[in-house]
Image (cartoon, one colour):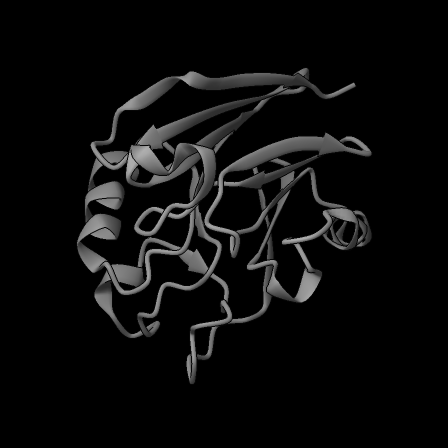
Length: 173
């Protein structure tokens, strides 16, 4: 099972359209971690299951989504209400309570990935306004392949190319 996580496009509809056109047939589900700044009535958002971020004023997206794909329960939230700028503990506790295998989040505009209590916590970074160590990539998103044995993570740049140094695998045991 493969899931695409993307976040923080801040109104950049063109990049969401390019990502969806390129990867919609390669993944099982596409989850948006918030701050799209586009209403759910915008056709750009149709391929994505989306949550509300802190700059999605007046939009009606939920704060958190869980969905099960091929027997794997996935979660997505923006992370601003989980204090992800300072600690992943609140996010990890939320993921544990939701009993998800993977929890995607955004808000920080910095890509990050770790396994905590057997749950993959992943921030795809901002596709349009990146910060931190990988800001020179000009934006990132991630595809996670979940198998019985492992979480396989591959980050991509805005040119839809995999970033070789940002390919990782984590054991699920």
